[in-house]
Image 1 (cartoon, rainbow, N blue to C red):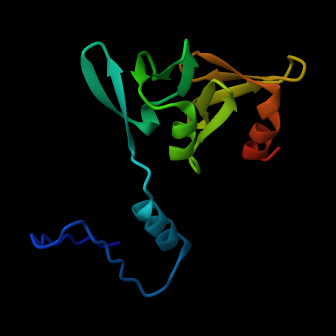
Image 2 (image 1 turned 90 degrees about the vertical axis):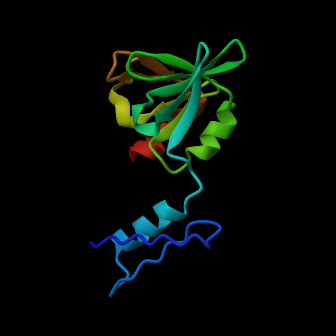
Length: 146
């Protein structure tokens, strides 16, 4: 695939044109990614600093005492968005709501334990554990194709 970038100072916003000999699944996926309004970065706060976190770095979002937090490999940050806004922003990605207070990135889930009656325990690559509430079990099974 060839990529060409032209600078036009007269443009108000970027414009992308895809030239191809056939409409393939790859081209369709590329067009969807380019036209999506979902930012690839999440703004988070720790102390006096504001951090831009790549979605790939994020393990989970959770709420505690009416505040929303984001957990990465070793660090936890605070985010100003509510879980419902994050869920909407992250729809169609590997992020799935597992309870009223948590959204998990399934890209960082290593295993699921279903031994607890009626619930599912998720083990993350950083060692964290998260629990799927009974209300969300069917949603998780659908996401996983079970």
